[in-house]
Image 1 (cartoon, one colour):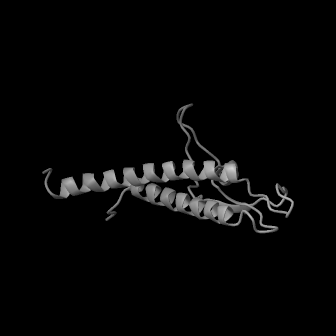
Image 2 (tube, rainbow, N blue to C red):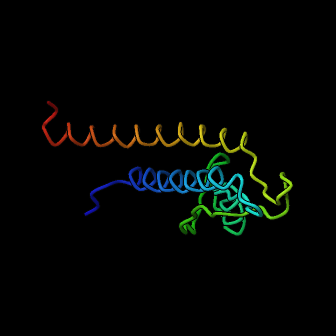
Image 3 (tube, one colour):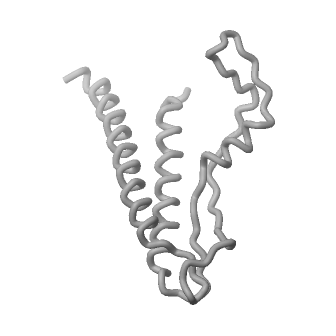
Length: 130
């Protein structure tokens, strides 16, 4: 018997992604003055596009996408070694990092709120709707 549906699993994976992204951003901000430090980024969309490019799909309707091979696609942490913003070889852009941090915090909070809502719904069902 499956206790939680796929929504819980997706929310959990999304929260893990947001946490990892927050760790990378925090590391970048804390190393802003470290000579030679290269900024890290956690990417999902590019990784997803590469993973799904090789999948064959079967459509029953023009608007449907059927992924027969549903392997777990996750995020990946990358390092940009091709740029340098500071004279010490560091490539951390504080404005970009602060913007990414704010965006990621909003994303994480939305996921946490959704997860909380799902648990409240389950609690209501367990208590008999009271």
